[in-house]
Amino acid sequence: METLAFYLLKSALWLAGFALVYTLFLQNERYFRLNRFFLIGGLLAAIFLPFYTWHYTVELNTEPIGSFAGMPQQGANEAAVTTGSFSVQKALLFLYLTGVLFVVFRMLKSTIPVLQVIFKSKVYRYGSIKLIRDAGFPASFSLVSYVFVHPSIDEPELGEIVKHELEHIRQKHWIDLLLFGILRNIQWFNPIVWFYGRLIRQNHEYLADKHALQSSLNPGVYRAVLLNQTFGGSIIPLTSSFNFSFNKKRFNMMNPIIQSPLRKQKLLLIVPVSAGILYAFAMPEYRNNTETEAQNENSQETKVVIGNITWEGNSVYTADELNKALDIKKGNTYSQEQIDQQLYHGPVSDLYLNNGYLFFNLESVPTKNSDGRTDFAFKIFEGGLYQFRKIELRGNKNVPADILRVVSIRSGELFSKAKLMESTKALIKTGNFVAEEVSPDVKPDLSTQGYTVGMVDIVFNVVEK
Image 1: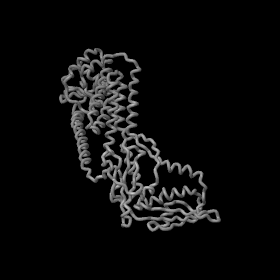
Image 2: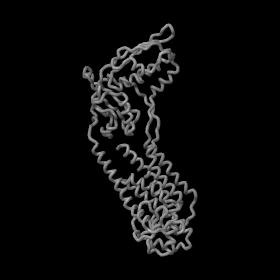
Image 3: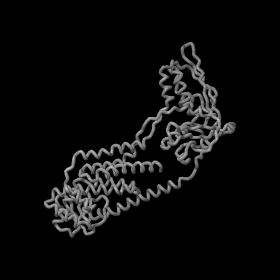
Image 4: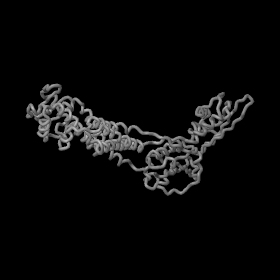
């Protein structure tokens, strides 16, 4: 549900950005073809660009998870995560899908009768178009390669109407309307999408009027025919109506005016708007400075040749399982830093820390042999199992505590370092907190240490933006 809502929000902002630039700067320009491309660009942006997220790098100085363990208990006065049902989200999703189905139903209800007429009525050839005369449609309109007119239209009037509708067909305006129909079904609740549809149809009429007048022998007759077609039926999806947006402005837009080509540069105003939207939804990618520095230092470390490897104190995992996780082969050359990385920050520590063993600890004891190889004895302290108990937020003032619904850890689950780090990143990705200030505080209840499963509380320290 949250993913869908985020998509709809981004889509609505992209559409609003294009609609704002067009309404303020382009709507009264007579570069109708450029305006058409701009409006199509807005449709495509609103449909597809929400899937794209710009990423930027955030440098973090993160300590190993083990440093959190054993810290003294601190008072918690923040709201704990609540475990409520998602009935509101389900209701909203049901309402949204109901709206989608209703809009699709209305579109089909309007379009199917037109298709039925195409299959049942007699089709006349009028030049390069297919003409259908049907009394069921008061207004003249076109759909793909078909033109529909009322039987009462006389021949002179028909000629002007056909010139106009032929431009809709030749310029394939139905493609724009199809894209708009897809977006309208997705954003049926958004008033801007309905307004945007009117802008598209309005620009289609300007385009058709411009070319129809150029081919008309008597522009006055064309305008008179337009007046006669003022009153007609409702707008049908995917069709271009001859009398759409008939008003004084449409007549004014028919008058040719010489404009400076520099006015076309107004289209570039969408660039800063697009940059703002991309920046608003940018997501951070996190890089651990500690790990990066350790990797840089590894190249300067003295290398050792691995001899025998032994394990002491392990009961949860066998030596074979630990060797497989360590992935350090006898006879190969490594630095001590590389070995420590595998032990303390790699698969070996993950075996324990991601499966409830909060107090897991390990010591590496190297012994150099006369043959130049180094034997390693790894001493393990496994500790007991711990599970999450309270999950709290500290430092939030305006952001409600139920933001913790985005974290992946749950009360009653076994402690997991991976889930804890994943939850930290999830809080940062909400965009409500300063990325560098979000840190988890692991607070084990030492009084439960002798239990079969101990308890650990988690406090996420945050600073709101």
